[in-house]
Image (cartoon, rainbow, N blue to C red):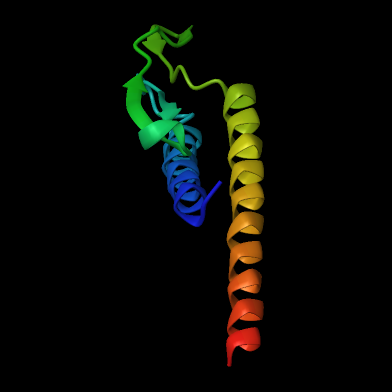
Length: 109
């Protein structure tokens, strides 16, 4: 995995975090429809990128005749943890690349 693939994955995780944060922020908004992020392989089968942001049109719970948000907090929390691990793993790749570049420059100079 190259540094470009790792940067692409961090960017994809960032988009997923933003979508998840929006869903959680609107958990108490009447008639709010949650969204989710779909990932796909990057160019040439390397890395990961966002393929689509999909709105979930399933109904939320009806309380006193008013439809609530269809946000599933459990699913959102799992997604936030997945994104956190995705960023951490890919940040380690970027860090290792930077360290190797520094060592190579020290050897040449």
